[in-house]
Image 1 (spheres, helix red, strand yellow):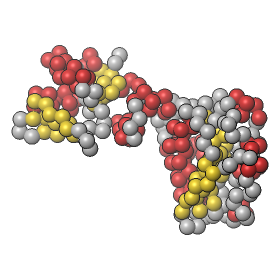
Image 2 (cartoon, one colour; image 1 turned 90 degrees about the horizontal axis):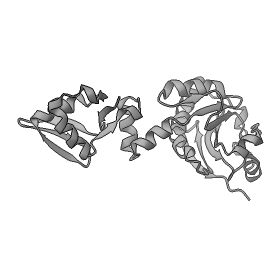
Image 3 (spheres, helix red, strand yellow; image 1 turned 45 degrees about the vertical axis):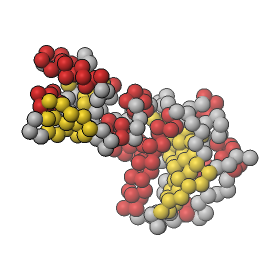
Image 4 (cartoon, helix red, strand yellow; image 1 turned 60 degrees about the vertical axis):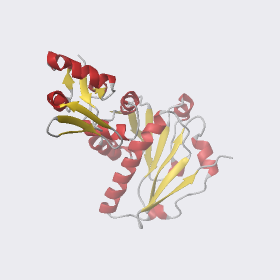
Length: 246
């Protein structure tokens, strides 16, 4: 059954004789008689639950592309609204949020649990993930199975623990782990032996998971992403640097 949802980037309002939908760049006016339907469509609504006398308004909303197919998402309106505000098409949003993410590596377990709890709209799996997230304390001592690289499954590297923590690069056939090791010297100096307080690590975890949430979209397109986002947890500052294979 088709369910429809008013585009969550639009705000509903009214005055004495007019209902209107307002976004940052658009303004749509309707007779006040359309207000009940507009209010109803702020939540996913089965098409059969829309009154026959409202069908003309429904058709007009569809022609103006003010509706989205809520069946495609099964998501809270706030999630859909967020991604639409970033100018992604609803079909693209659905495809990327359904992209299965698998956490691997020695530090994977807590990150898997936190990511799944923080972003329930994302698909997290235990095997055969379409995107692998390798979580480690040491970027240069990862045990990456060459067979995974040969399959072309993108692998996002997360370095956690210590004063400097990072996400990236994304390993693909265009950038293999052996090339990463050859291209960089130890990037984090002696910070591997410097512990940070639990509260600081919690902050770092939140930052890295947020970065992963957005990087996932690019990695899901199988783009070769050779940059690293590095956070200095002593100053809470970040910088970007690129891996440049020989």
